Length: 254
Length: 254
Image (cartoon, rainbow over all chains, first blue to last red; front, side, top):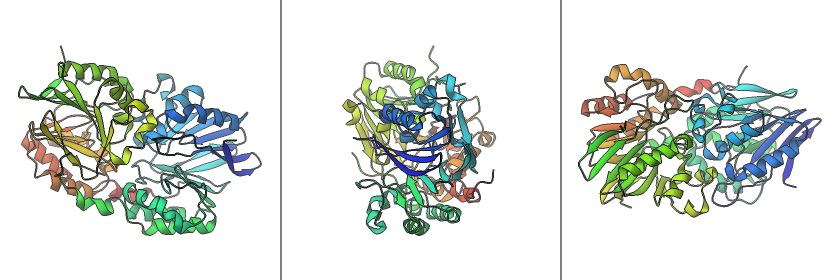
């Protein structure tokens, strides 16, 4: 069927939903974490996948209830269908405090606006069943108000846009060097600066990570590949490292 | 009686700040600007679902039988792009947005019919023509979005700055006094704008433009050369974003 189990131990399960997105919109992964009777969906995506993603999510959840919707940042591919998820469940949606007043522009129903909850800049913990998920600050990677989720049970770091890759046809990175071509350009342009990337690496190195699961493209699995990815991030120049001295008035007419 | 503000009117060329249709709710206040030259119109950052009907109707009134030629989307945030599909379905306009966001915007559910009218702006910006009059699309990446543009209209000498210069919480539409206005914009700029290096590069770039009005997407406009220069000077060397965020890069403790 359309799901893949990344981790399962007792009542704790980490599920990757099938990629429902096709066509013009960028491919996106939808992840679900269940512990006991409670579930969380990460970055559930836009209108086009809402129907199928929610049907699949409820089928995976079974008798567990959706407790949280986690929105890593404010981009359209993340938040466009938030209202639908909030209207059809009693989940709380968590997003950076920076975006709380921007999301209602989608037309959140009055009924559900109080279930949109701010994450402070420092991050927080979310209790799910009998475990606690860590909500890690990852601001400016790429969004100004951006968070990632670390699941200490499954040892999965859900990294949002960081580690995203586009264009390859595999789900797991097997050869890190060969994979670079699918992530390099995106990271150089969208990620904000090397100072931020290296601060992020310093923060996550102490975590025990077996899988890095980005929101787009393939997962980076195994301690060797995870270390290769962190090393790559640590020295990558990007964003304002290139751009800051290049703002200039255009001369080209089109 | 209309509460629209006419910022410039030379008969053939008009710049209109539309009435604020959405103040008071949970969504952040947003300005909708219209530029019309010889019956050709450009709407800037037309906003979300909640204001769509009224902004569309006001736009058509001002066009007086002319055509909406462009929808300008400064960046990818919800308050900017949520209703893009509606605008494209009801007009023949082309939507202009940073090439960085072309594959993200379809997550809102753009109809296939109109997806071909979503056009990418290259990182360098460009000069386009509105009813024969040049409109300069100025690069302003990382202020705040990674792919972000501003619009300079050389006829009215208005620089439309998007989120840069945005203010929240005051009850006037024109800045009366720069120093007392700072309290409404400083906190936002310190957190959402990306870095001193980018702010300084922007200030250097726009100093060569002849600007009478700076018109942001949220809050009050800066009218007159003195206020415009005060604002540019304030941006020059302004510490923000990644200059200040590193202390937040820690594993959360609570």
